[in-house]
Each structure stands twice: as C-alpha cells, then as structure tokens.
Amino acid sequence: METTVLDVDLKKEYLFEGNDEGCLVIHGFTGTPAELRLLGERLNSKGYTVYGVRLKGHGTNVEDMEKCTYKDWIDSAIEGYNLLKKRCKKIHVIGHSMGSLLALYIAENYEVDSVSALAPPLFNKNKAANFAFIIKYFMRYSEWEPRERPEEEMKYLLGYNKVPIKSVDEFNKLNKVVRKNLSKIEAPLLIVYSTNDETVEPRSADYLNNSAKSKLKRICKLEKSGHNITVECEREDCFKAVLEFLSEIK
Image (cartoon, rainbow, N blue to C red; front, side):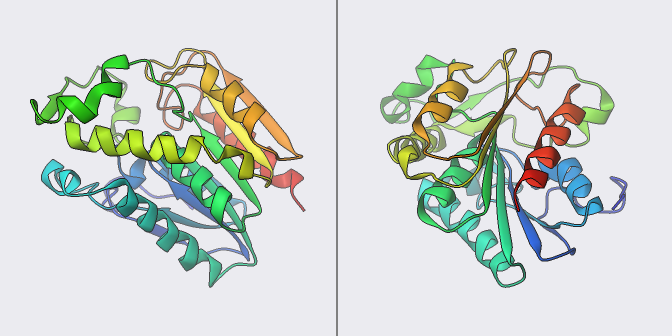
C-alpha cells in the first residue's frame, strides 16, 4: 500500500486490511501512528493486516496527554489488540520506544504469536527523568527544540515538542510494571536497537534478551540511526529485520 502525506491525517490511527495475520503497531511516547506508518505499509504490502493504534492523549495536544495515566495507554494498546483479534488468526505485536513497552506488556499478559521491540527503552540516558515523581510538583513541562532532519523523516515525526513531567512519571511507572514481568514472555521475540540511540541505553536490548523466556529470539543491531529507527537512515534494515522475523513464525 502506497500513500502520500497529503492523502491522510498521519496523526490518526489506521487499519490496512490484509490476510488473517494481524500486526498491531504501537507508536512511542509523545508520538503518533505516523512514526510506524512506513513499516505498516510495508507489512501490508506483504499481505499482513495492520492496525496502527493511536494512544490516548497523543496526536492532539499536551493537555490531553497530561490527563492520561499509563493505564490509559495500556487500554489503548489492548483495544488495538482486540480489534485485530476479531479479524485475524495470528497476532504479531510490534512497538517502537514506549510502544515496545506496551507490546511487551501485551506479550506478558495476552496470547500473541510474536512480539517485536524496536528501540525498547528499559534503561534511558536521561537520568533526571527518573526523578519525575518529584520534579512534577515543581515543573509542569519539559520543552525541547526538534533537531534538524531530512524532510523525508520530518513528515513522519509529528509528536509534541514538549512533554508534561507528570507523563514522564507515568512512563516510568509503565516501564517498572513491564520490566518486572519480562520473564513471562514466551512468544517469539525480536529486538531491534541502535548503538547510536541518543535516548535509550543500548544495554536495554541485552537486558530484554536475557530476561524473556522466548525460545525464538532475534536481535538486530543498527549503528547509524538515532532513536527513531523506523524513519531514520537505517529504516530499511529495521523493516527487513521485522519481515524476516515474521517469516520464521509458522
């Protein structure tokens, strides 16, 4: 399936109809479904039914996000899972960044045929974020200037340029819940990460790989991309890793 950015509102959720294998793709913290749209289109071109969920409080305004708890984000992901479950015999859950935490949560608690964690943020480089539970009482938002990127990348990075500190605290709560239950994961597992990730510590990948009980595990290491591996310079390598992994699962 090919679309142009002028055809659709890329911040919205999307459903690409295909065969009876469904792929739930889950975007990251402060982001939108656009981050994974190129991957979703590629999966659909290979026959998969794809649902790109929009997490509650995302793709609208930061005030909406501030009202959400991590349980709201879990609920959004589960709604996407249930939507595909009604349509498909197999379910593959694929998430980027915080979306990978939600994908892992689903794999810990629901029946899935595989889980793919793209840039899983189990350990993050911004150590100040660990104190969001205190900072939120003194500072409402953290803001940043988006770095310069090629236009082709910017089309798909439509998230907020500031974040409620309360939401950072909710992210940390989700991370804690997921991390303590990684041993429950038995479904085939793919991990894609970059050693050049400016946000996530690379040791997150090894930690996840060592903690999950999956019999089939695959790791793809990228070296040039930053955190947004589904839109940056090695996105084709990321897409190839996902497609090859899914082709192994029968």
